[in-house]
Image (cartoon, rainbow, N blue to C red; front, side):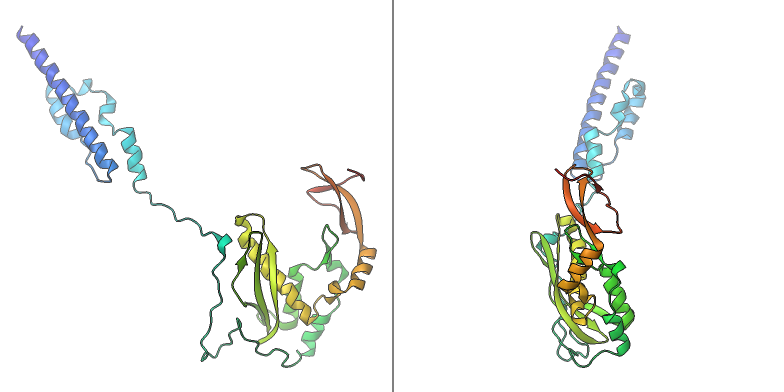
Length: 281
């Protein structure tokens, strides 16, 4: 009888101890969720439980923090990441306006040196040199163009690297489909030309790349005033070059399987994503 009473007492203490432990764990979970550093409470209950040999009877999960508390604990230190700026609203890159007393030329407004004098003969010869027919490329719609890197090479030959540059004349304007900005071409410390560049884009992620294309487009237009690749603006040259060097071919898009006609150089082959095909749709 005494043994049975002892077992009942032990069992009752075990039940009470288990309830106490679960309550402590619940308090710990609440503390973790609120952002406080709650102590792990295993030792507090283990000390009492060990007195009656209860440790083997407690399931292992009693000594583990609740799963929702662990998840909350991992999430608590994380800081919300800053969202990327929406470039579709513009770049907010208005050129710096210099004070009137500054010695440096404010190229965002100044026309300093415009038509002051002709460039040296060496520079003029490099700028006005006839274009090499091998440098001329053809777009699929038949438009002739000179890659923008060729314009930069011509300017480097004429003025030397660092002897010329593009200065923005206004803020970058971003519309729903295109990026545009006005630039000034400056060479040997003198303003040469002002032109507005533009470049289309198809998704907001493409806006930074479109801004670079806009700059190159402005450079191409500014170079017209220096006579660089002026043949490409001459209708007679365009017609003769197209007759001698351009052909029209039927192609099929390798993904969509749609057929169309495109223009390529006679010494070129059709490239991906097209492949040459028979006429017809």
